[in-house]
Image 1 (tube, rainbow, N blue to C red):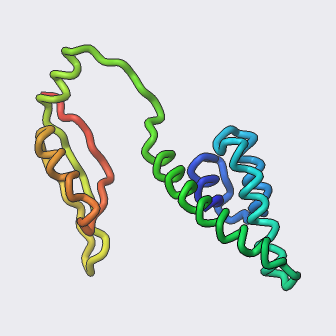
Image 2: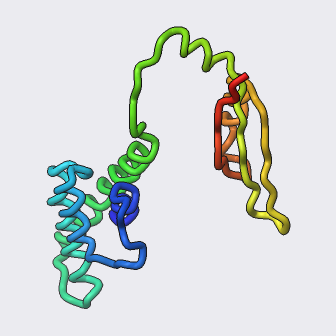
Length: 153
């Protein structure tokens, strides 16, 4: 999860590089991607898990604390990834006229169906209502959206 957060937040990452998790945690904290108060519990889990993985003794109380901390961290990091992924990169104020234009516009939606013998690209022209309907059950579709653009008429 730490690696995933790092890849989401640091755009110039070398995809083949495998830096140590502890280094990623400190880098994410330094860049203010992760809050400082989460750094210590994450590094504690990494430290104790590394000891266990490398065959060193881990006290029972430490193992129990890893389970407790680990469950909380997993929950926190899952929520963090979700929130970070859907967070707008920019928020711009618009006028009532612009809002009306967007509501009444048509949109070109391009999606790909990849998991078939012959992958296809679907192009749909929809209204805002149609776009809402398309996205409503979207997680159940075996396709992914690659483009949404407003059609100027």
